[in-house]
Length: 75
Picture (spheres, rainbow, N blue to C red):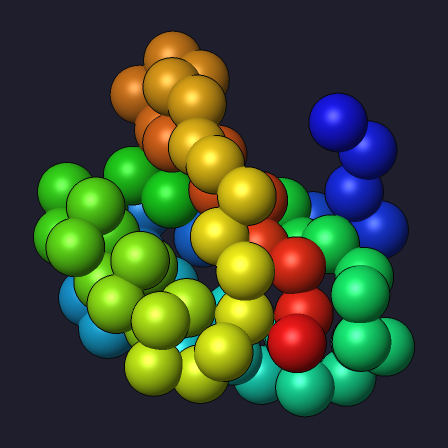
């Protein structure tokens, strides 16, 4: 799948990956997709919860080395 922007949050701990994703998504157009890279284990809970609470669509995630790549479609 293609994405419009990518945010590298590897090495950042909770809540920074989600906070940075929220800020980046606010600057994107509705329907655009953000690819978020995170190594924080808490992101497995934080990212889906953030998407559910904010109305963004979580399109999926994949492991990429020591990181997880999350695809989020802006509401």
